[in-house]
Length: 393
Ligand code: RFL
Ligand code: PHB
Image (tube, rainbow, N blue to C red):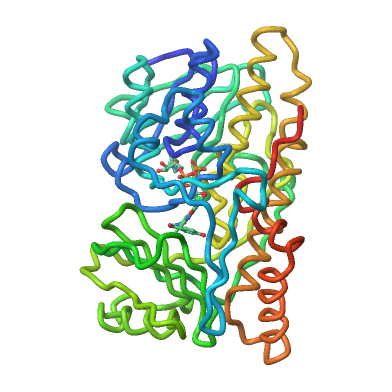
């Protein structure tokens, strides 16, 4: 079966779906190809924090209705160390900005519903996805979905995550890879219990990092620093609650609310990016181009930031025939990507326990002390956490 579209999109994660939605609003056609089923995509538990600018874009582009009803606006976070809480008030530090706690799978659900309602085409559950002729003016996507399909496109957006086929389709030697792995991972759980705190709590403890987050007024999302090779079977519910209790203990009588654990998993931590983020007519965005460790809550937001630039560049191309912004796509995105890499790496190093010894331990505690006692340092953390402003393009 032969088809044609303006933009072929590989991957129906937040990047691919948001791109297709923004392009539709600009009158540009796209088709999304996804190798998993719709239900799987709509239930994959991942991110939970949206920067102010990401949440605003959902509202402005008409997909923020449920988020505004069910999402939780947070005006800050707590940094907990040496058994004490230190609150960072975001609106006060950033001139009124906040963050939105709303699940990534709800973002995906809302975007899929919006695309299908607007007549968008998404192929789910397809196999053998491949991109061809990416350096020609007529790149193509091929896949199997009942029968063989081929889509002729003007451009292809590789939005297929870290393990997708887009990035590996670029010949060896073109991309420069930057990578850092960490000697720890996160054990994450979803628990059917009300959050123990009104806002997120990032804890540094001598037994390791812990994070108290949430999904709704009756669902908590909690994380523990663990070993990358950790066997999840070794972690009974009791062991998890016990470890969370130890790491998050305070000296002010606060207690951790415990409940039924409905999901457990271990996530590796890495910093990764490629330069450039484009080759020929294939443009990489989101996790396909870069990964940040989750400590700064940035992955989804960075994916949306890339998409915003690509959609703007395509608008100029189709309305005015200009290719200058498309040519600068990588350069513009990478300025933000590197700053977000820096922030995510810095939050990760400051909050996790490593084997670097006592000196490094004390420096990280001093850093936390500084961040929570200096207005300049708190402002820097807050400005990054709520999302850096966008450079004019
Ligand atoms: P995704 O979400 O991985 O979507 C890629 C899509 O492509 C599909 N795909 C293919 N489709 C067709 N053909 C192929 N060959 C394909 N291969 C893959 C996949 O099935 C999928 O549907 O990438 P995208 O859109 O770039 O979005 C990135 C975000 O998902 C990611 O950065 C965040 O989840 C990271 N992240 C967080 N980000 C935040 O902004 N705030 C957070 O609080 C936050 N917490 C997290 C996180 C990621 C985590 N994990 C599990 C990695 C917490 C965790 C635990
Ligand atoms: C989450 O709620 O999943 C979450 C929150 C903040 C992070 C990472 C993950 O930094």
